[in-house]
Amino acid sequence: MKKPHYGWIICLGCTLLLFTTMGLIANVFSVYRPYIIAQLGFSNTQCAMITTIRCLFSLVAMCFIRPFYQKFNIRLGTGIAILICVFSYVIFSLSKSIAGFYTAAAFAGIGYGLGSMFPISLIIDRWFARKKALALSICSIGSGIASIIFPSIITSIIENSSMQAAFFLQAGCMLLPGILIFFLLRNDPSQMQLAPYGLEHREEEEAKVLRPSAPPLSKKSWILLGLFVILFSAVSSSGDNNITLLFTTEGYPPMTIAFALSLFGLLLSVGKFLYGCITDRLGTYRSNYLFGVSVILGHILCCFAFTQNTSILFISMALRGLGLPLSTIGFSMWALDFSDSRSYSVVLQRIQLFNRAGSLLFESFPGILADITGSYIPASLCYAVFSVVSILGVQGIYLSRRKQTAA
Image 1 (cartoon, one colour):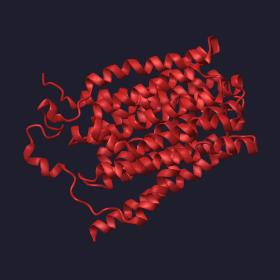
Image 2 (tube, one colour):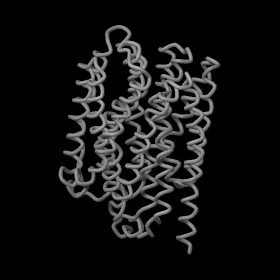
Image 3 (cartoon, rainbow, N blue to C red):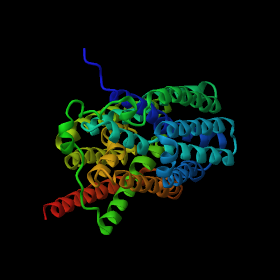
């Protein structure tokens, strides 16, 4: 029996990494928000500022991420990022004031910024010459797994014990995978005397696999791409963080929302796997349409949350879960398509910086809008519009790029 290429073990390590630094740090935090407001007396805006601060420090970390990984390498650097994430949730568990929550959010943002898609995209690019979209999709499933498992667990612990106990348990659930990740990851195939997946015994085809030199994006294209990434990041980050508050304030039972969040996490994982398979076969351009429509329809349905129809809750969560791989794997694939082998890390960092900037700029937006209007539904309507603009805008850049290449 042929031994699996170690690249797939790297995928396992990266899956656990994203489970920790994105899934547990960002994706399930929305479960805490109604309890933070109810138990600690914070306003909608104050509560929204917790994730805004996390996004701010994530953006700051992204500004230094390339020299950080040049100094510490991917294996050691991701280990440091996980320890910072663990420390942040220990602070959450000990805090009862808004200042303590803001401090914890700052450390959470640093760990999230240093330990998410940037190092994963770099290491997958090194270990895989083919099936990169599939490999990235497998890695990104980790964040969805956290959304499947933890909403109901966190809700149950808070209801039966305390919010502090839930935070402390989550810190422990970050530390244990972190130890395993450190032993699984290797920075480069050459460390194990291996070639990247897809080049074993096929060295003569290397020239066909490596991405050729491509003309860089123009200044105008970069400005437009940055705008579209910022808008879609608002949809994926701020929309996720406030989805619990949307349905809670419209009168849906907490456990029903928790089950819906678990469905969202399950279908997010399914959507990521489908995204990898479809993109490797059809290309990123067509995948943008397929998955973008799913996100748009999901947010349109959120606008009908006032009906208190459980079907609206579950269908909207399902559509968003299937479509939101665009906000993780999609950004990495856009970087691949808009770069060559030498400029990939630079293009990837820029796109991730736009991603973090979008999260930061719009994180408090739903809370502020809810304080003004008394509802989170207007924010969902804005997210539907943002999704349309960003998807169509990125497709326009792809078409412009094709014309430039043909010319």
